[in-house]
Picture (spheres, rainbow, N blue to C red):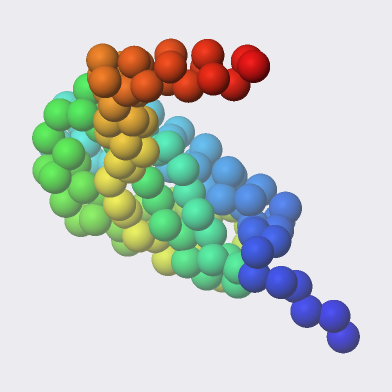
Length: 136
């Protein structure tokens, strides 16, 4: 029997199920189905869902729009985890209901930081100087 190498990444099925979970959670939050004051006043974007290979665990990355009150939103999401898990299990037919874990999505902050670094005058000067040397 041939084993998959670790570097291959998630299977198509794992990616597909993660995307389905993301869509279901986004729909629940957009409709306001969660009866929580914080979630009612803060639009939340579900940016990514990473499923475990056995599809029993899902790490859900969320970002409040405009990045306001991120900790309060995360706390509200975690408080309502049981309800959200039930809804996901009900809407997606799977053998097991995935256990949801909510984390803040820092990818936007990282991208902004990299963008700021690349726009720094010192870096721009180095990049301009590096291009001239490569042409010869």
